[in-house]
Each structure stands twice: as C-alpha cells, then as structure tokens.
Length: 144
Image (cartoon, rainbow, N blue to C red; front, side, top):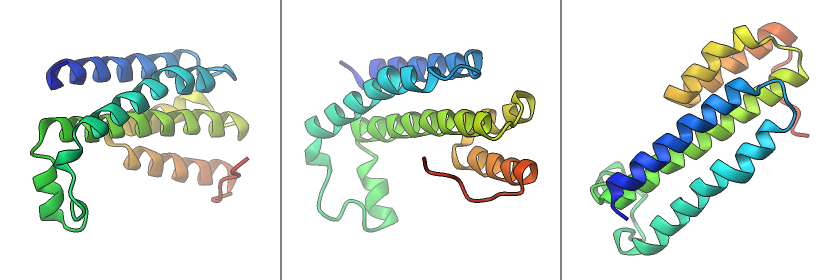
C-alpha cells in the first residue's frame, strides 16, 4: 500500500478516534475501546512500517538532528513518525479525559486542552496540567 494511502487511512482513523472521544467522554469504556481498536491499529501500522523499512534506520539514526532529518527523508519512515504522533496524541487525549473525570473537571474547560492535544500534542497536555492544578491544587498525577 502506498505511503499516501496509509497516511489518509491513519489520519482518518485519528479523526474518528477524536470524535468518538469527544462524543463519549462521559463513559468509562471509551478509552478501552479506542485503545483496543484505533491505537492498536496504529501500533500495528507503525510496527509494519518499521519492520519493512529497517534499511532506513542505522545505528546512529537518532544521535543527531541531522541524522533524524536524513532518516525522515524516507517517506515510510516519515509516515511511521506521523503515526507515532497520532497514536500518542490520542492516547494522551484518553488520559486527559479519564483524569479529568476522576478529578471532577468539567468538559467545557477541557475542550481547549483536547483541541491543542489533537493539534499540538504536548502543548495540549501542558494546558491540561495547568487546568488540573488550578482546579484541584494538585500537580502530581496518580498513576493508578
């Protein structure tokens, strides 16, 4: 399958996942369903791309910014990186929704955090951590 086709599929799956997360944010099962389906599909796609394109990866591929730039000139390595972002941003969104529910943080203040997590990953998480601290006066997250 072409890199462009896989890109469209993965981007569409991510959008579907985010829509489902927003639509069913109050439910306890949405995180399990999204992790068991879309994020698992992303993990399989990523693993397949890495396994079939190992030639693009050298022992020193990640030890300098120039080597990373060179690595991502390969369209399939670039696609693997994109899928990596999609998977972890959605997983972060699931974490935010679940943690907000546990801490009684309402949905409307959460929307900017989720939007920016969808668009800019770590920045959205940072917004959520600030919101969480403001609402609960607790910075550290319970890992359970």
